[in-house]
Length: 121
Image (cartoon, rainbow, N blue to C red):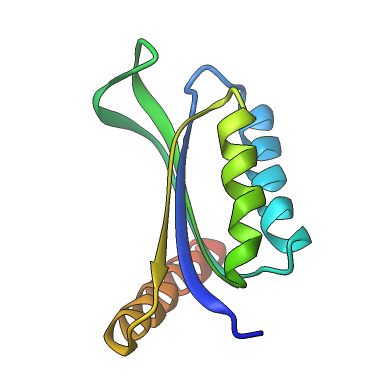
């Protein structure tokens, strides 16, 4: 079965400890891979101001994962987002058209370049 290209962003509550935040991120990544997905890049934006208050919070911890997976595997990811209290917001985008996939590949390259710079420095 063909794998689609996806980008998922989620925002965690700012009240989590750094350890709890990393544990939630690892859990979400495990959900993606356990459903047959392949994470090809990630972007850890950290804590940022929200555009508007969500659940009385004006800040949140942003994380993005770019991955390839079959469409049916998204059902579990969306279910997990919905039942995980610490996830305030989430969004998953599918890149299907040739131009969209090209843009997705560009974002993956940028994310991986940022990550390797961060690891070197």
